[in-house]
Image (tube, one colour):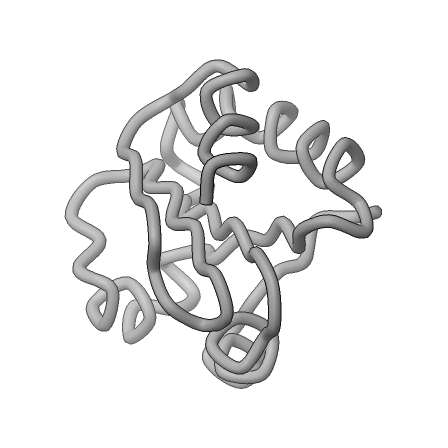
Length: 105
């Protein structure tokens, strides 16, 4: 499954109104650590296909979403369950740590 790219137009329906788990990577194209994390996010999308939605929000394209969720540092990973934030982590994380976030949500 491919990573979903959320915008202000799709975030409500794709994340906040979604049933189940959604992992959202808040990132920017100029962010070195974000680029390092990108392949891990892609792998998680494949590993959790059918169990969770894995998506991204480019904070440069969607500053309102970044502000709404208080994103101060990137990359920030936020896990939502049934539209509610349940977990958050900041910075590059190993794949297993992010997989655990989803599994324990």
